[in-house]
Image (cartoon, rainbow, N blue to C red; front, top):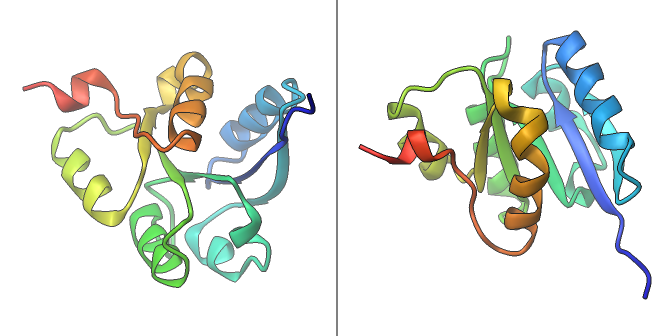
Length: 136
């Protein structure tokens, strides 16, 4: 049985983090990075963004932030599956992320431990949010 390749787009203004994430994901043959952007404005201009199975979107970026970019992308195509990447662990963010249409959230400090689980859960129609963001 052939394994489906998961097409991923990474959007993050932190070049070092983006490169590390790209390297990490490319080690898994099930993932293919089809494009990268350094801010929401670049992401919105991508012609292939709607081909992605998963979009990994930083929240805090210059010009157009990840929340606004995600809202605009989902207005064009509500089937996109976007996972937030953030350093911010405030619970108030959870509501904003869900209302904006994110299917998941991974704290950047936990990316390499939790991202693959988040991707699988979201691809299978679920949601993935850190427990400490949901509790309380």
